[in-house]
Image: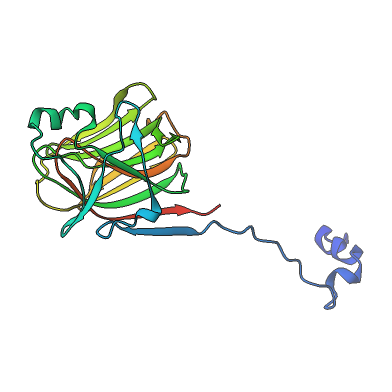
Length: 227
């Protein structure tokens, strides 16, 4: 009778293979990236954490100031609505980015409110040189919904949008996630915009922008995965 092949193989193996003294084989596990959470209380305007920045078309970066409702863009007295909406010479516009933070894949939660035609925005993947903003995405909340704009360094183009009624004078919780070519946005807990066709995927700064009317920011939380 022929010995089964499996049994024959076991017999031929050296005893050391089955010895109790033989140490167990261990497989090294690669360290997994851990989430990083950063929180900025904009109601106290932590200026040491931010850098004022401007678009090249504007002479200055504008100015923010703290109110009892949060951080607001400063609008000079006597400015006409048409000039404010058109951001003529940068009037009423203010923008700032988080210092020493460059990310491509990120989740940002921001509490934002606006009055009249105000258009608060979260800046993402923003390129910066000598305080001037270059290529970037700008997620704008306004009375008719959301616009995701892309600035290619020369002109703005709409990358995605969603139309729905947004109540003025009320703080809205906006969550935006960018990962590769995908962008996903929720407002007050409801997903309102999604696209998988982002063309610009380089890492850049995170920030806030205000203009076209009074805008208010409560707080901002940034979440990303450590490398």
